[in-house]
Image (cartoon, rainbow, N blue to C red; front, side, top):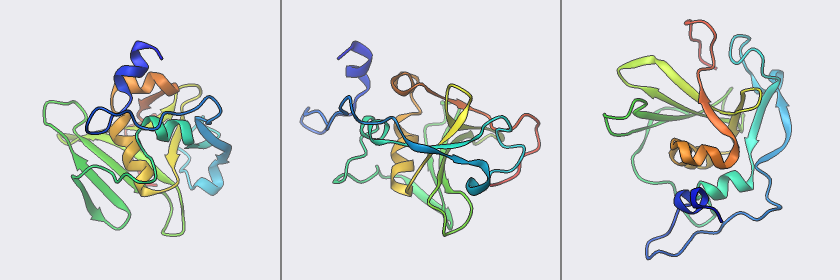
Length: 173
């Protein structure tokens, strides 16, 4: 493995490496969920055809394996909306995962924002076409938010953070 991969893969206490993805593990689950079923407003990534769900490879890089729980510090704000407050010196000091649609939906949005300027927020997206990357569960979304907040980790899967709105008006999905 390369230097970047070795430096950002999570490790367990005691220095043993976590389960690493195999070449056959997909980065994203197929197929793309189109805009209508995803309940995406018209001005939320208007050029994106829909959303992608994180696959096994992306989740394993993030340390999301069956026997491990997300780290402490996540707070339930309201139903289906969880936040983790990071250090103040980071530009985006709040991680947020929330369920898209209603309680029946299995799509969890991964976001980060600046607590001093809540309109300054970003969503985890796939770099080609800026297609939002969601998770199938709250637990998966929490792992994605924590791991992929680091620039080196984003390079592993071709993702980035992007503001979903072209204009300054923000509406919730």
